[in-house]
Length: 210
Length: 210
DNA sequence: ACATACAGAACGAACGTTCGGTTTGTCCAG
DNA sequence: CTGGACAAACCGAACGTTCGTTCTGTATGT
Image (cartoon, rainbow over all chains, first blue to last red; front, side, top):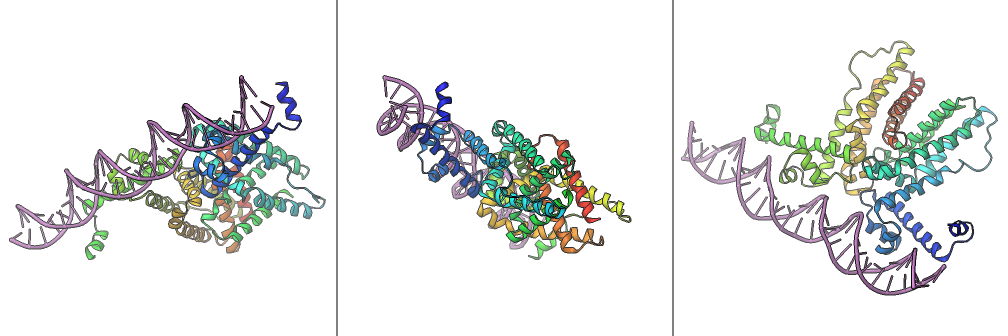
């Protein structure tokens, strides 16, 4: 017990490092497979090949496919919780505020949603709607993420003279919209059109907020 | 040839009726399975059981699973092309226009998107992103539907003093948003909260249009 | 020494598809 | 009207694959 805690602080042992590296490789392979082949076609075989790891090693680290998906989902949600953007955020004048908010939404689309990770998450999200076993293990994670990121966004944009409840609602709309846009490819192949849609939406939200 | 055409006009022969009924039962079963079990778990076996039809009959009408999904998708898109809502649409004053637009969006959510059919369509949509064979057979249908419904909506809301291009853009946003909301269950279990989100979004769009 | 990391064979179950056989309407020659 | 050829509707067994999981054995770091 104490040893485990102590090791957490210091450099991990070589064996632990191995395990961590292997698990990372596997999860990364899962993300790639989900993005490229979708949930239904993301089989253990495919993951194993993509990760360059034996069947036994995979089952050793992740005893079931469900476990694999739960860990992958958590991994996919984690980096999106980091503060929005680095660098200066000029929000003095209403015009600057508008521009910042627009840029933030475009950034979310390009860096969080319209990415391998964003698409992989959507696959898990859709799959867990009907896979009750998976849903049971993952829904709390999703729900918690939803609240956490909502809190984070509220903090970032408080002081615009907008009530907190309204802020939460508006940013939830943004997340919903961007997620929906991730399935718009089938209807509108043109990527530029989709980007334009993001900008228009961002402008509408910015007008509402600033 | 002429007989086939002649029969199309008059009542179909009994054999054709049989075929049509069977195909309808099958497609209906597919929709139910997609909604309830998702794309990955919608197997031929399950469809056959749900439809109450033998394995042979199913394969006779739909030689492959791909065929089944293509026909189902077309079936799912068809009814959404009907004119928006029946009944009088008071749009004289700006206030009435706002109220009508809001009601239309809520109606879309409740009657088209948040339904068995809407969820089933989402399953096919997500699956066809990575299933290239399916995508190849279905993408044109999706694209055509997108344009058709866009045209229909433009016609309905022209005369509000909004440019046609902007109208198209705004209603595309609506479709994207509502589709995204169909995956919000995982994050927000409360149905009332989702309905409230629809209303808020509708209010924002109405304000933009009227 | 011992636990963990890794390897791969083998498992039964379920998948989508193929195929030969049976039933049932349709249609025209007699 | 009627009989019989024909095609379509329907049936279910069997196919080869692939799935996720289980299990026994080996290598390696602690």
